[in-house]
Image (tube, rainbow, N blue to C red; front, side):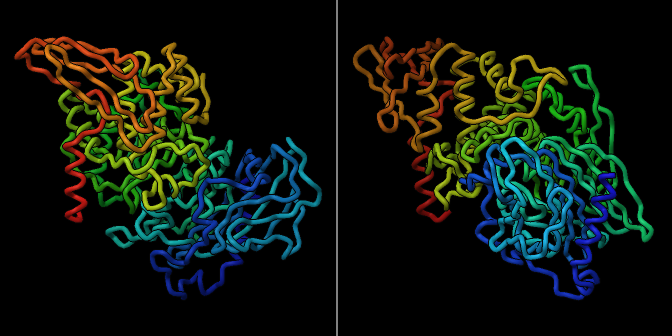
Length: 578
């Protein structure tokens, strides 16, 4: 029944697409076209109270793609509830996708009763929606979606061609948001509890997407409609992928005793490379994450990867892969491994505010050297941590304490931490692990991801997390107040400096933290062939050093701190315009 309703509304939306456009008689949009409004460019951030209180219980999305015309048509059925009374629905939708019909609880609205001047669709309600009550809105729309300039660093649809000339389409929307393709709540808590996707594509093409495949319907003219069902995908995680894909599949047998399907949709021209990647990387990488973090969160659906005409993105259960099957010095495909990490850090636990997205990117970045260590030992780990260390910029705090948009976090030019939510956050986690120990670190990680220390398949649900949650978890697990640790590393831009001084037969150490904040971080000191740990109570400490002894402070590079050598290198590169 749901599929038939979606198909009927999709037909109405298709009628809104001019026939000439459907026959590809209009010029195709260039990258960056059509332009999008400032509202559409905003994902997250402070929202009007009446929208911030909306919760999406279920979304049924019927979408048809016209690759030759580079247009889409859609019909969205959204079942919503609200945490406060509202007299209208505010739904995010790009103005390049004009709305042709709206109904509320099955009753059509008169044309012109809704408005979408800047990319926030305003739909009046006949009577106010009471707190806790539900309403169903159906929205038909069609148009030319914004074309990405350089996906995934900016967002939009990518209309490409396979080596054989067939259509190859992909979407990415982490930065600008879900409203580039469908009417949605474009902020993290706008995540739908469940989504049904009906994707109609031309004959000969396939449309792998999020969740579990419910069926494929072949229409009279050869087009096919692919029906997928997914639970709790974050708003930017819903993805469209269209090509004449070939498929590799297997059943993965988890160390937790359950099994689930693993799938890789790839271009037929890349069959040999795809098989090598699938055989070498899929199962070993999953086992690593399950061993150190916990069960794969979406085992009731699938672990899916699809080859895309752009680099990659963490689309839940259908991760985008466009790394070109490149070899790396680390011995594994870092793009594949990074995006897979987001199934735990980003999809299972989702930051409710973009300001806390270091939880997604910092953990995903840190899991790479940890995987290198899992595979090859400490030497590989050290090399990969050093690579991350050289990328730290320290221009802005990782966490601002404000409700922010994606662009305000990911882009340094907007005052955000940018790449530091990857590299610096990974080093914060590295230092934390060495400070509190492996057992406490991994228990805190599991509590963050699963909401409990003993996850097993079926005993946890997707959850939201924040920096405050994480700090509280660390304190709970360790029985110690580590607020000072996170106040310096996450909420200050500058790194703490460790000052050393020799006085006679003693070595004196003192932390100088930004804003003179307290920072009693323990320090290891190697004296000849022995290592001692200074508690640094009050931020300082001293140790006896025999005359002529060889001294190395922090000999195993466990601590994130100011480095004069790296600062000189950074200044030299800036002076040289590099």
